[in-house]
Amino acid sequence: MTKTIFYFDSVNSTNDEAKKLVENHKVMSGLVISDHQKKGRGRFGNNWVSMKGNFMGSAFFPVRNYNSIDRLQYKVLKTLLNLFVKITKKNNFKIKKPNDILIGDKKVCGILIESFVNNNKLFAIIGVGVNFIKNPILKKYKATNFKKEFNKSINVLEFSRILNQEMKKTII
Image (tube, rainbow, N blue to C red; front, side, top):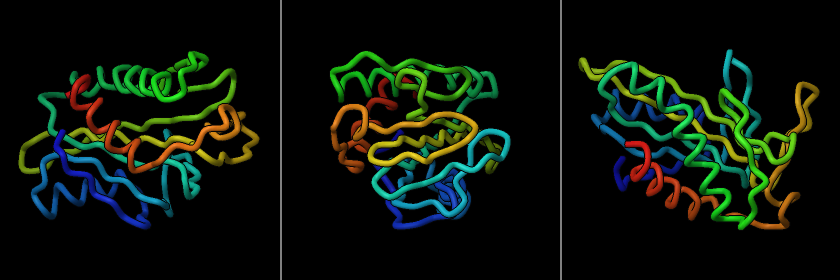
């Protein structure tokens, strides 16, 4: 990971923007964050509903091989869970495999890991969405947010900085 955080008001997808940064600007790693995603996505092409004030970001970096990517999923979820416990001083988060973090039985965070090759190098992109102040009302599953559960406001830029540091320590 790098110290570089790329901020955008609005993008189609932070994962797509991360890929563009590598392909067009020869940036090897970083964290893309945005206030809004027009076409955020989850697994199997499902939409990720983005709401201003929530975290939408994608970390990207080169990896050695596809086995490295396979091991990322749980490491990322564990890193996020530990970070949430540290922020809230609460321990009622749980990982729902393969890619969610719940508070009780309600989704508060989801990740999407994608990979691509550029100039013969393999890259991983870890898309992260966290419901800090709002959550969608969905039929498929229950969702919640930090504001509702803990009456706590989280500064997205500060969270981005801390997440960047934590991922550098534990994942890369």
